[in-house]
Length: 134
Image 1: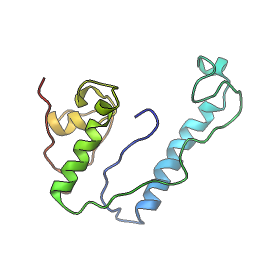
Image 2: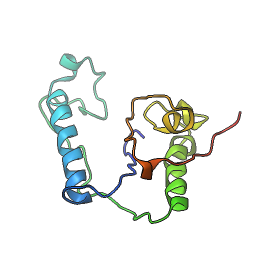
Image 3: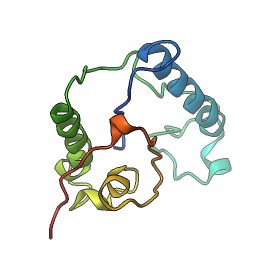
């Protein structure tokens, strides 16, 4: 999604979900903030854009202060949540079918294809997703 993401994860082996999310947010911010602080002319960005806001050397927040979690206890609920995640760009009108959203794990689950979104190959995450038929 342009302004948020969904993540279906198991309980981390070390730490807790909050620590895992903190790590994800920090590592992403460390990679993105140096690019965002450059002027639009340096980045080739058409000023003003939603990332640099047309202001050179000024940082704007990337993340909301917290994340929202939901505990999933059953296979049925995992499939329901994964379907919700895959359908999100369709509901938003960004693509016609889930497999068109390039930042999705849909094609990996449905067709076994590697994609931009890497999924772990864990037994707990092996689930069947609804495959759309045109």
